[in-house]
Length: 457
Image 1 (tube, one colour):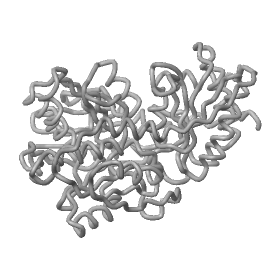
Image 2 (spheres, rainbow, N blue to C red):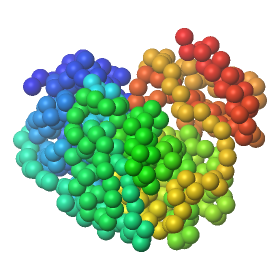
Image 3 (cartoon, helix red, strand yellow):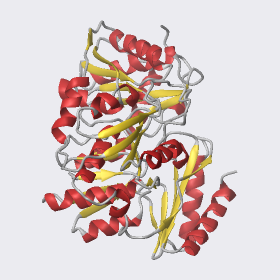
């Protein structure tokens, strides 16, 4: 293994390291990241770390090189093997080791890969922590040593956590589960068999070419097969997981995609009456219906920036009982440790339905009505996208609009909002719009997409 001399700086993103294999990230890159990581955490007083990986084709070789680098810095490694990202998170608690790396590119295309890192008790690295690590890596002042390698299987302990955290009611639920050939395909069937419910699995074979659909349940077209099967089998609910298993997608009994902000409202209605800690967190992409419902239920709430690492850290620093973001990350801290897990999020949906006689579609009928777009994605080079957002902010200020800058620019009106922000996972700008009427929605979309196209050239 060789130290990589010309690592692409753009693989260091807002809350992880991510790029195309082998163009941006290869085995020498992984070795160098490992050597740097081991050296970096030693400066923080850490001598052990956890490493896991998903089922992507490049993950085994990248993980092997990464571990070689970490060991060469003098840090001990607990290798937990092929796991979902939530299983890796739980390993932090089981092993009482807060430092680690998960080799995964989550829901990105099949040729991508990357590293989710935790240096210490602060949790997943993000923002300035990633920048500091990038600068440390490029400086190449690495330590030399000989760490020890240990193997650890976390599966049964993880399953026990799930079984102890779910309490089903008397109604037996029939579900369809779409693993999308991702990492959950190795665990979901065994886990869900632990509970008294009827289910079948779609795309439950581990295949990192993702032959059936892209493993991102926040994109409705990726749920087409699941929607069809739910209707065909008269299932009560459809559950979908992303590539590394930390996000959930929902389909109701009528075969309709349930946006995660609507799922969040159902969970808030279930959780908040049972707790004194009425504190809710949601990201800037969520519907105003979440805010409306939090107010109705007497909860304190915060709209925060999008991103797993940012949201998870804020869940704990703000002491929130429940939180979620539109992409499908959800965090439960009522009787669960508070990390995001698609399989657990699915079980919570099953649990809720098992205590109600109404169908999922009926439970959704009285939710506040807003009209919104899907999350829209526009290609924008990494060295340009931040400048584009700054130009849009100038436009908003010139027009005297009310604006939140917690994540990009969210323009707030009495009858709707417009959100434009840079993607932290790729060279894109994302946008979403919501309004009380369809006409107003179209107006907002036309105005701000015109401005976006003007500057994003």
